[in-house]
Image 1 (cartoon, rainbow, N blue to C red):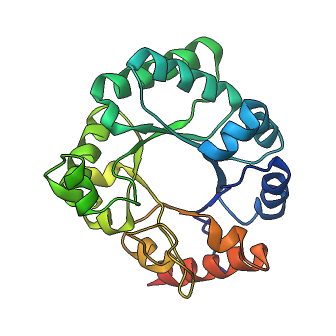
Image 2: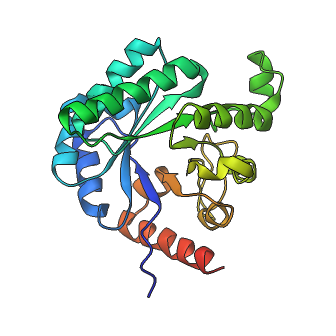
Image 3: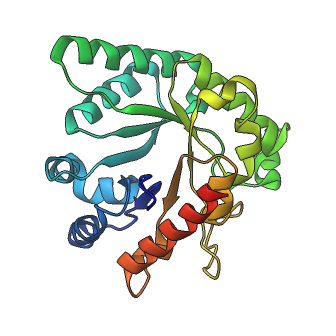
Length: 242
């Protein structure tokens, strides 16, 4: 029997606390954690996140924090007090922002004994492709930009990054293997890619080195979300066995 934990992070991309609460309660024993993103956080706020964590649901708070260093560090401290397990910072905020946030969280942990979240650096959004980056004036392209930003996250003391599955090969090179790889853009076979331009199946992503898979609509919009999760977990188990 396979005893390895599920790598699924369920994206609760909804503005309804009741829908999110029901899904989290139904699926929490079969997934790694839930992702609370901008839409749900804007609709329901910190109290809803606290409710989830106090009820034993591990939360990945995906706000992609990007502002001046002091502001982001302060927001990260408040996220830690909510009890979240992981938190995203946007690496385009630069090294000072990333480092100061890490240091403030470590100081919080030492002073108050709070278990601080693992910090993940967001690189290039999975909705962007080469043409989008060119339009933004980023001439290096997706792969080179992801590599540069991943190295910045590593040097800044972050524990992992969020990147497209198609950059997984880059993340398995040299020192980048130390980074936890959290991968959105995951679409089981036979499901719509929606707005993800750089997607991959769960088994493929695990085979290429993904640690966590962020999956939303293929589960939340499935006729039977629990069976959808268990089907993905079976695909992951097969990929892990090689």
